[in-house]
Length: 400
Image (cartoon, rainbow, N blue to C red; front, top):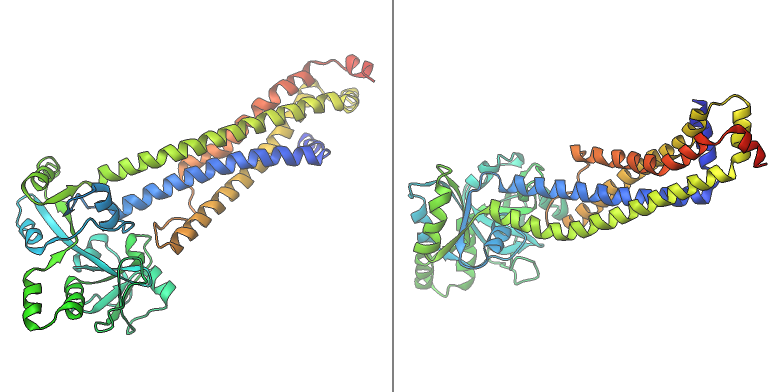
């Protein structure tokens, strides 16, 4: 305990050097913590939102755009497809479940999604208030939508044309909130959900000129895309090929496209990881120079300790404890700063109504941060500690 206390006092006997070393170590560890947390939470968020969805079928275009728009609701859709074409898929022998998704309008930037109650059942979400819609123009809102807009059960609102807000309001077709979802961390938290018929009704009411025009529009109804679950995993081999070659639609695999997306994001994280490595290397060199200089500067103190009976191993331990103090402090600060940065990014993404991340989590890989700090501290202190260990008391006294 005396060695640990001495090491603490020696560490802060040169406050500027100690603070600089601590800052460099903290920045490197905070960068690694941030990258680990961001990667973990993004991966978990995608897995939660993609769970149980084997393929997405929609208009031809970019497969990744189809996934981002229809499952994660982060992009604009590739277009619409005929309702009859999607209806035909419900009877396909390889299809177990079809969930229709219709997009086009929003409320204060939150997307209005026309779908079926199966969409809510698929994610097994719970209602905090109210119930699921039972007829058109009723809506269930996500927890984030309710929190940011102040809507509650019984309130009415009108959608605006477009997915980003600011478009023309559909004042002739107001929605009424009948349910509010409990917070789940899923994409549903930031959506306004209603019956598919509501989306058709809104646009037919606003664009049809007469009853005959409405009849024509009903016959030509479309939806944006469909989320499909297979009856058997073997369907993944033949069903997408059937859609892509035999129909005017395209099939996109969420698992494949998100893996491709994460690999592209990984290029940026590799750069940040390299920067964190440079910071840690700089911190290690700085700690080494500081401890090496400390051995030279404290020769009189070391001589006095040896004369008082301190063995060489205790002198070496004093240097090692200084490095371990730095590693401990930098680990705590690095983890706190990394968690804070992740929370800040999560808050900014919520403002952008994007992926929900930022919760306080501790994935197993985060234990690598204090281990890495300990490794850097020990490696930096080995040579100075050995130097302090091997010098005899007579040489220390002669240096006076």
